[in-house]
Amino acid sequence: MPRQPRIIPPEGFLHVISRGNNRRKLFLIQKDFRVYRLLLKKLKQEESIKIYHYCLMINHVHLLIGVGEDSNIARFMKRLGLKYFYYYQKRYNYTGYLWQGRFKSKIIEDDGYLIQCGKYIELNPVRAGVVKIAQDYPYSSYRYYGLGIEDKLIDEDPLYKEFGKNIASRQLSYSNMIINEASCKKYIVEA
Image (cartoon, rainbow, N blue to C red; front, side, top):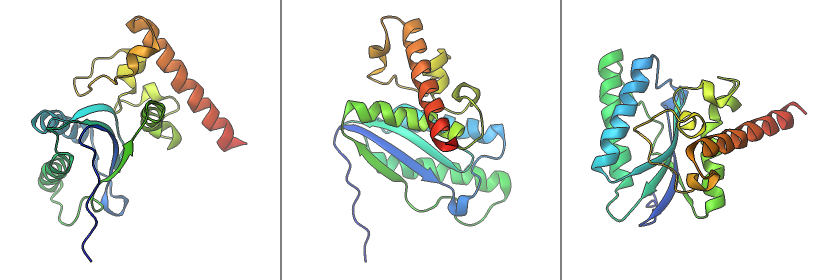
């Protein structure tokens, strides 16, 4: 039976997840993260994709993507997956499937969910126990929004300006939101 076509809005936001096959580690050394980020940066321009939030975990990737009329998310993800596979194959003399099937995507239909999805993505390393606080994880968009560290991969979240009148107040409000969310989740898990 043929697979169902993916529903993608002509304009809007998507939460995209891509996983390593059989939980395979996709990123073994820092250079792997750098290569993937460079591919993201190059291909997002070529395919008219915006990346608002991201987190590169050891065995999977989360992206909060903006698409427009000129965007082609399927081609973007296919090219990204293949280019990274060729790099990985050469570097580690790897054969077999690197990715676990097609990428998964969920349409984000309202502003409230857009913020929740960004938080979810950036708190992924905290929930996984990789770091205690989001700012300690170098492979996510949190450092841009919460600390003001430049990240040329990011297209600023359209709702970020609502966090404050200037960049300092936005960073403080955003980091407080993430810290409060993280401590709430920790409390719920430990209870």
